[in-house]
Image (tube, rainbow, N blue to C red; front, side):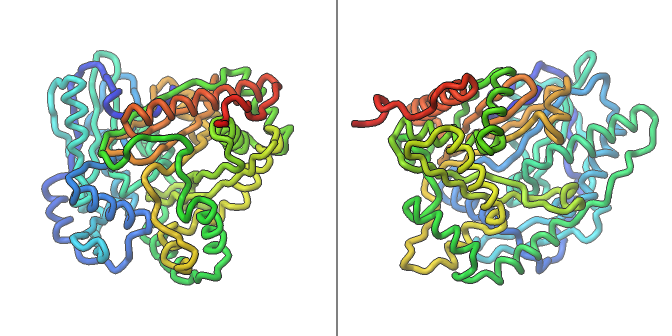
Length: 472
């Protein structure tokens, strides 16, 4: 079982809670940590600036990635303490914190000796679901070093493990790392085996340096910059917006979620066959369906979206924790396109654009000629992801009985994020969007139209836009 939701939707049954916090000695060492000249990554810089902007306006923003799963038996607190400390000391992303009183001058501080990092268990007793959610959301914000909390909720025959980690330190690929380094390591220790021998992890600091060198070498004439500028020019000089109204986004509101099953098991297989027959993969079909839904609802002659992707390439990077995710622009021309044509065009756009994930849009704005009118993303931009939980590494957790869940805080939201997840027995769409009535109506309409397109593809029916749904 595998799912994505906001933390308000988490209703764990009551149990005795043990939470691992950074020790006072570790926090003291962090405060004494020397300045490190390695710059933050572009991803971290943008995150810190957004946090500072939200704080200045008295707003919260989602800043945590929260994971939960179930483990049978009674938690061996000593073994779990060993496992958590091993994880934190293994990855250098956890050793840094940042001064950003001046968001244009962010200063990194780094703990020199990873052995100075230690978490210790604290017993919190029996907590209600509301109390537990509130407790998890007290995970320190980016102004503090210890932006991580781990805990267990012990029940009669099993316990729920949770991890609340600042996005500043990680990206979604940590799912596989957490499972391998915490679940598997813990299982080995409680069975009396030696600690699992893990491959050598890489360095996120090294990634930050490489990214800095790469982006510094870019010029307005670099092919990557020109490609991003052309993409933005097709979207009013910035990143794509969600195609339907989202209400007044100048009024702050928390995020809301919606999850809809769009294909059952057999339909999923038939949909994939239709993608392959059209010269695409499942991912190309996902973007094609979004494009066909957009055309059906708005009459648009092209579909544009950005999709996150992992920029890790080497075996060492694949076992390294940090924020490596970049964005790939996807464009699909839509006039009179059948599904096979749209899927093939979407797949080609994604495949030929993956190299652009290494280029932060902030760097594009810095280098774009003023006459091109490239500007910051506006509220209401649209991000779409495809997650294949039928293959590794997600299949390991999705096909298990661990009840693996991912939670977002659901704080101030100004964009639409959509995940299409292929599971073993179905394909589902989950959306996170501004929590107002207009946005809920539009996102619901978009997903329902997209579900209809998926069904038509799976059933071999025509997918051309229906004229009666287009404004006349």
